[in-house]
Image 1 (spheres, rainbow, N blue to C red):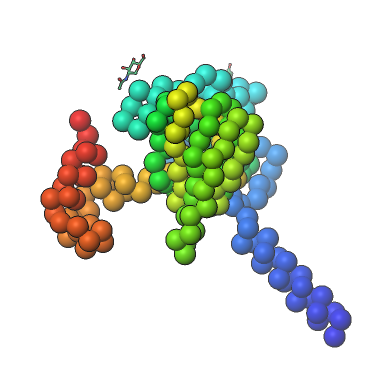
Image 2: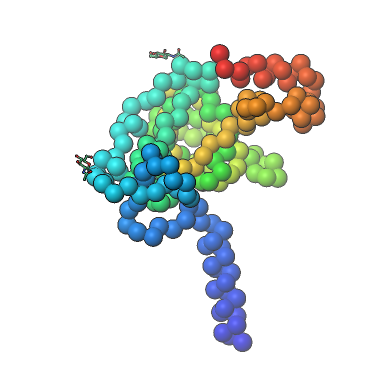
Length: 215
Ligand SMILES: *[C@@H]1O[C@H](CO)[C@@H](O)[C@H](O)[C@H]1NC(C)=O
Ligand SMILES: *[C@@H]1O[C@H](CO)[C@@H](O)[C@H](O)[C@H]1NC(C)=O
């Protein structure tokens, strides 16, 4: 009886671990991504000749340019920039925001994100699958978490630039911006899908599509 109960608890624990895991576990110390390889697998094949440089990236040291439509820029430090992250299940990014800048609503299908505010102040939030908004204003030195797969955003409502460092439990979190996915896909989503989904007319849909069209 006791053994059976223990067994059930063990199975429940194992399934919890399975559900909460992100990238798969590693099978060797290192597997530096051979990004140029044509071989497709879950992750990247390992390259043979590796060095400390494969685990290094200076790209987050300086603010990214924010003179764009959204007034914000994401500088990733994922496996595509740091090949040594392959199979290790973590990555980072730096996000810079001009005053008024926004990192518009998006999801990371493969990672939970935690941000640490380097400078400034941000209004941040995520929305659960039952459409509850969890939002907060965060400032320098504070952290906030965006659970894996949930739509989230950050807005710099302040008068000075802001910046965060983000950590992810995936070597390649993936980013899908809601507006871009629906209004700027290639080929485009039919207007009728969007007029029905958003309960608006074709004119409104076309107007948004035009904003996202490549200039
Ligand atoms: C390994 O890479 C280094 C530089 O990254 C290069 O100097 C060296 O020749 C390479 N060795 C081999 C065997 O390819
Ligand atoms: C943003 O600023 C940089 C440097 O000041 C400049 O090279 C670039 O063309 C600007 N981009 C836009 C979209 O204005």
